[in-house]
Image 1 (cartoon, helix red, strand yellow):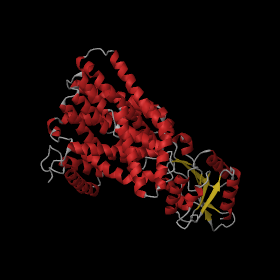
Image 2: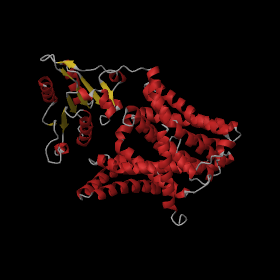
Image 3: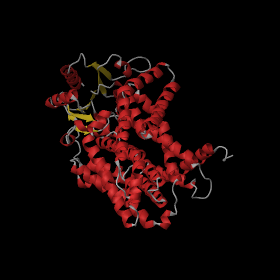
Image 4: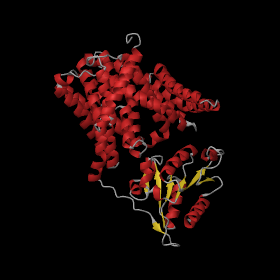
Length: 556
């Protein structure tokens, strides 16, 4: 029966073993993804027992990468990428170059040819987007400033890698024969740039108008199934079209699809609907990685495996750490990004596979890269766990002062702070005015470019207010009033839901700017959620918002 239904058999054995080994890993306090990798090795051709279908597993892994990158795009706009370009672009390019040189140097000592050494170094320079996102999510840093930089860094790496994948077949002959490159290579480079630029322009000019319109039509059907199907079809369809027409990777195509769809007011719902599929297919991704691995390499070439793992986890991390610090960013940024990049994944396998097919890389090279990938992926979560302890030793953060004050009207009663979400013009004006009046307050902002490090040492907190750990840092359980200045009704509703889990009695002022925004703050009966006050900023200028806030705080 297994021979007639290879897809079902592979999923049944793979997911079943992933569940078993993932559970065991969790009980042993080891990241669950280690269990998923072991499950992949268990159904690989190199181990006894059931053998899964590698080709089907690889394609399913690609679907997982598409959905995951689509989800990232839904939360990462082009503006976000531009905000971190000063560190992400030079950092990613320099890190890839230096990591490639490290890999080439070690391979040259082994006696490998220039082409084999180049492919090995290049493959080790690429980090896995899937592993990066899992690590940042587990560490609670995905929506933080350092998380935005790390994601932007990987986007730049992906763009560079896609360009190299297009270019590699054209220069393969020259690499093997050590002959000079001819003018045809220049045309291939130009052709690759034109295709990539064409895709980006098409998505930004046409896609950002068409995709939100399609999503709106799906919402108007009133069918939850149609909406979910629409989201998945767009993610996978655009990723496939990008690959077929523009020679862009599936991952990058799906990322741009999500980034463009972010323009829709239903982007948050789209992200929620695809999350279960992202989780399921990310497990399949790790299964696929495990299936490609030959455990005998650990016995036959232990020193080479150790060298590859050292380049990935020590060399790349040290390079990233140094680059981030040289570019003027804090130790938190440097350590988080260094941990995030200390692994390799899907693009490394693609590069190595292409090098193998072109005769540039020996078969042992592919096996070494897989060994380095599995070991680094398994150990990567442990590096994230070391970030905070190391940070406390080298750069201890000053905790925010407890803002509870004694009321001047009733000394038996204490008052908590006012929490302002958003460090834009309105948020900063409110912060300055409340501070001048002696009212304790904190500002939460997730955009790294809006806060200086000096501000983060005072009453400004960098992070996403939809996360409980960020709200707890600003004493949400003691807060008297929360003011949302984001001009994003969907985002503000999500923040309110999280706030009310931690402090159901706190008063919330939501500043709105569009007709219909008020509907997002109503319950099933059509009434506003309790303890919510909606103010239209088109009518309520900052002075009036301040007057209302101060009046409420003093009456409380």
